[in-house]
Image 1 (cartoon, rainbow, N blue to C red):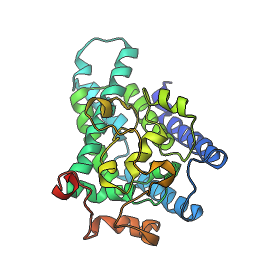
Image 2 (tube, rainbow, N blue to C red):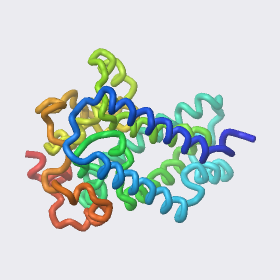
Image 3 (tube, helix red, strand yellow):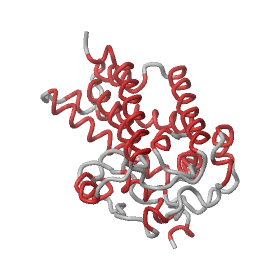
Length: 278
């Protein structure tokens, strides 16, 4: 029996452990004071994550790992046609898929129709571990489409895809954490991993800061492609989180979050908007 036979248990186990550890750490060493009701936010954010899990299970039960198995069986993709050690194949799969997610994230900020669904993630009025789980259901499905295409082109093995999915979920919760890291530790960590202070800049209400620090797992792509911003202009304690046009209770209720892509006002956040460039 292989690791892949226990993929669901592994993913769920890592999810629960990281959520509990980060939730505890946020209560012990918080970086910022929360501005709205934590129980209300957590109920909505975790409720959306649960809904997304049900939809994905119903629509695409095999998921990206199943796609990797199909690609391997048919010899699709680059990595399925080169002879590499298993460990190197896993490492390359994780790095290549992480780069794919970076470009996908930029695209969701670049194209207004994609930004509409991505607004749900950015409309959270606070920034903590559950923000890393707050994605519109349509965004989850579109992201799966990108991942399926990447798997077909790159040909990563199923084990590499499993490692990537587990890491992506864990690091998303970590780098959205409302935790205070020592400055020296943060400076060292962000050379190899996106830290909460690094990613918090991306959730600033200021558009030019929102359109920076796109990495979820590896920080290198922001360094290489010039989208890295070290600190927010107002400082981590003073910066406003969320979107300028989405404030108040509608940013916290599950039904309002699901309806948000239909909003007339999407702000000046999409990169293609001339006003944002200025």
